[in-house]
Image (tube, rainbow, N blue to C red; front, side, top):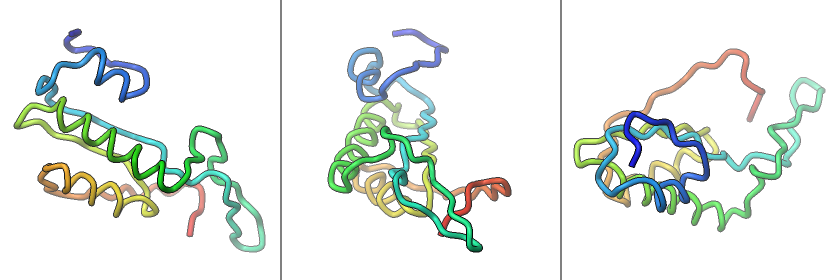
Length: 121
């Protein structure tokens, strides 16, 4: 396994093929939020969210996907390791619930006040 290396690829493939169990100190994850394809109306203007195919996942498949990447993360982390997972208010409950169910201890939730973000409801 490469040490002090940023792995680029599908996390499920990387965890399975390149990462030893209980070998990682920190995981920073920014998975798809599954928000694409729905228009957003704001102040009489229409905005599109990301609207990319990789971000359009059937809701049940998205739950399975979330479960799989979090389970893989849990297996890869050392017992004293940490995970930081980016999400939106739209998938926060799913991510936190899955993290908790997998045995992580949720110590805190950070909120990023992003003043130039795409408007969302």
